Length: 368
Ligand SMILES: Nc1ncnc2c1ncn2[C@@H]1O[C@H](COP(=O)(O)OP(=O)(O)OP(=O)(O)O)[C@@H](O)[C@H]1O
Ligand SMILES: [Mg+2]
Image (cartoon, rainbow, N blue to C red; front, side):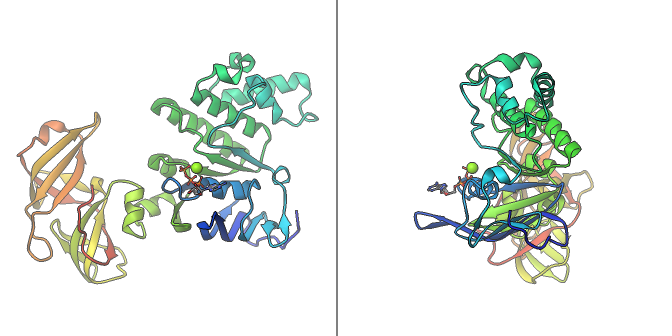
């Protein structure tokens, strides 16, 4: 690596103005991101937004057209500099896992081990331990990759990457082929392993709840730049714009008239935290902020319900006056009790917490 002055704040990774085009199409348009050592960052974004491209540039399998990549203050990609992938001490689990088909599972995992640190006997024990970390028992070691399910192959790829003891781990949708239960269990086991070893981790995922629960920092990639970077709670509760809000979960969007720090809408006067605009706005609330309560001040009628097991989504036409006294807006919220929300029932609602106001034209459509 080319030695550069160490970043004073101890960042593990610094991307500055990273751009990359393919066939004249700009995929990354000058992306800047800092990642502190030891934390987990989730990168989310629509399909084709450049998430894999970004991981490949960090890993050293691809290089940026312009901009710089630094690891622990050392420039690894930039004008005239390109440190090869094997000298970056990065673990990379590709989107498709990519195991060596001619090697057994155990040999695949052992491939990542440093031979000097793990002579034959202890290598076997280490492989078994690594398989255990990804919830595979030792009997899998002698199987071939094609004898495993897609989810099991993903977990072997993860174990192989962990074997190297990397200081930075890049995971490209590593849990995508797992079923819901196994996915949560594996995610927790992997998070614990990564935290234990203090590895800085970057995870690409399509799963909103995975991004929010797995990470210390969420980065939303859209149109070649990061629309927002922040801790999961902040990004979820205070998204910078409507698209980001909708990307990270369900959102209720209402037309509102913002006066000072109160937004007047069909749900009444809703407090808005540090508003950046006034007048006609789109007000965003998360569905769980709207509760069905006997003494709620807002009335509405159930139009539609959808049962999901632990909860039911309830679509309601509001009676409250909108900003122009219109009312009649339709929202979708969640409730635990399907029996309370039959079609045609008149309900009372109350709102908890603050809303977020986005400037601009009134919403043409409602969002659910
Ligand atoms: N080697 C390449 N040659 C040409 N185009 C490429 C290449 N790699 C990526 N692209 C294009 O760059 C864009 C971003 O691709 P990328 O794989 O980074 O997306 P992604 O965000 O990982 O998507 P997904 O969520 O579907 O995995 C796509 O339009 C893709 O077709
Ligand atoms: Mg991808």
